[in-house]
Image 1 (tube, rainbow over the protein chains, first blue to last red):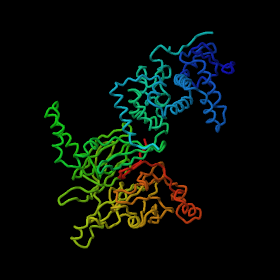
Image 2: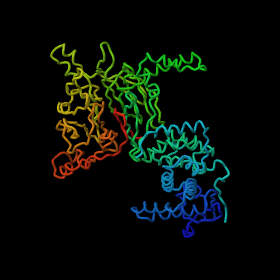
Image 3: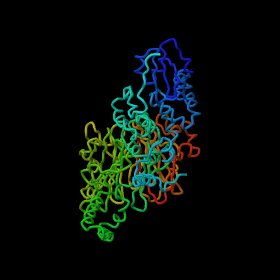
Length: 159
Length: 476
């Protein structure tokens, strides 16, 4: 779909880590804050290489940036819900990293919200595994931390 | 094809500090977050800039933070950081919780926080030393040395024991076990004064919900138990209470104010108790002691209902109003003082919700408690239609509490099964002053139905032996 972006005006070429080249309009590229400063120095022959972004993620990002303005104001929520609906946790995480890297307008909020919902009632182990966080507590420190949690909810009814 | 611009390679550690180092317009705030991002292993989430991780964490409900603290050191540090709560503020994800102080097993004070989102209750850590030394407190100082000596093990040097004993005694002297008063300011809960053994304390303890711990704040100028608190212009006001003097407990007329930003107390003019000055005889004046029975912050001033007190009798004498602009006290509007419903033991409870002043009138019979709203223009208290379903008027210190939470009036009480119950008033059904108290047919109809139409049980938890002491809502 990126190829559909008008090639006539100064379209920007973005190259993903898996070697695909996407041509996007400056209007779209400008909403990726990380590459914004590079745009004014580029011409149609410039290729901006994105070492941390895979084609799948860039496709999604462009889909978002093109689709959101097209949606009616009342339909934005539905559009955003639809946008994240079919993403697996793994895809969510990959997209989050791409979005965080490119600093995509609006999409940072949507991804942060989605991921926050995903971890909100999860165990420590789930969160560590999901994000690949290494537990750097000593066993004593971790026990103390967990004890604080156990104390807080001990004896409290959870009907 | 011409030039190729490659953004920083993924092999370099500082790949996030690329061309656009900070979010626009948020440069100052983000600097600190970014400063750690060069060290990938210190990141909250590998491969993700910390500023994005903060965006995620700030959207997670606060009740999850106690769990998420155990993920890693960086997570713990982030969750305890003011920065995260700044992001929550920017995003509008602050949460207002209800904090209820209860007394269990006689004299042990225990705090519970209610998260209105998940309706879950979380126990707060005890004020330092209170729980473990509870028995000692009850038995008094005499029991302390014996208890300490029995704990002496061979590996502990005597000097350490004496040191710890001294330290402990010092701490005990500053630990309330009853009569402490509660105030919320600057994102923290303050527990002020109270009795420890038989003396009234000056000490002030501060609970920080971000750090989930208690620290000691500057003490008040005098020891006070059962003093009254109110918040005005970001300062915490304290009036009255009792202190221990010659011949027993003496009510205080003095008032002072705490500024959380300087951690300093300043004196205010004492309450004049003008009504008590005109008592007919010196004997009576000596016999009846003036006491502040409540305090509420309302319309930019502090309203303090007062009584004359001679155990176990209370005579209401209206009250006085402190105006911070002129730093002086004037008499309370007559109708306000006379109509202010009394809770047990002469105390006057109230809650200000959306600038309306509410009190609960337990009335004479069970199960027919009413909410009253103060009509400032008419200087009267008006009954709000609908019974408050309160079942327990037993001899507990506080059979019910009032709170403003999420912009609604709440009554905290114990139900027939001794569960602590948080009742929420549905403003639409008649508790707002804008479409109030006239006998519009719709209103009468809705409130004459089942009590559930105005009041619904918002949350409850097993109360066991817990007695209600006081409560506050706090948004962070």
